[in-house]
Image (cartoon, rainbow, N blue to C red; front, top):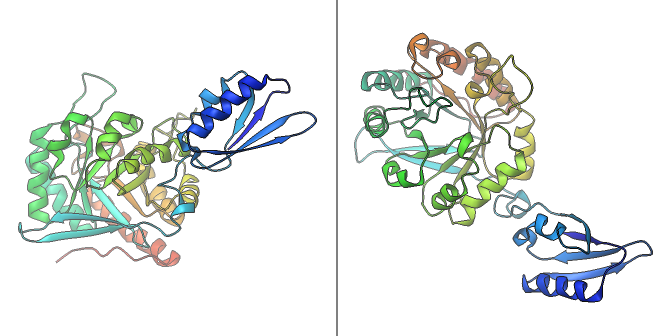
Length: 352
């Protein structure tokens, strides 16, 4: 980090600044020029609040030389992280094992919301047959309108557990409240939605558990802010983070959000964590899910999370962006062509 000092400052102010910085275990180097003085900092500058430094009277500007995230930074962890997701199989003694990252391409599929026992069991069997490695389903649903369907809550989780036992698919579901962590003991991959990406108290608590976390980018957040949210979880001890690009809010109105495909190679340049893409929430339109999925795979994503519903026209949540099981199976077939071209493992349907 570099701090540019104003041309004129009192020695007392400078001494107080040095004392504070050295109290943070940082080494300082002062370089004086004719027009300005520059204070260079060496050490873990992630502990510094830049806005606080900028507010100091003698400081002109502040610039980071390195990114503020450490645990998520590829510079300190050059090899790709592979996240192991463990779920129970058809029998309680069986284990379903899924790896995300490291050359694998993982597809997660299922409805936006668990609506009934029959619905989730039917969809689970169909997405498994088509090649999905994991089952997604919302039990607690954050909705823009307080009058919209909010999910079946604990009953929805029970239906997901039953679908997991019947199909062997590990399950993914979104957590909204820090007080719900114990309810998610049997959820194999906990999703933090876009609205909670900067719910720092929730992130801190998720850092204390030993369970993989799917962290979605906020609809108006930068990539660095996403990585800093991952850092919150990782600093607590939980290193099992999967990042998810799910579109950002722009001025465009033809789609629900704007899918930022450039985030895939950029995130993979800056972090060792796996990156998956949610084309369903990104576009909000079912016919765009397939082309955006193929584009995400070609751009280097480690997987996809796709909404699939057996009756999208009557879905209680996000039917317009949901694929039918048949359309999902067709998408997987098309994905295999892209995966083969870029040298990733193909998805093997589990029919028969």
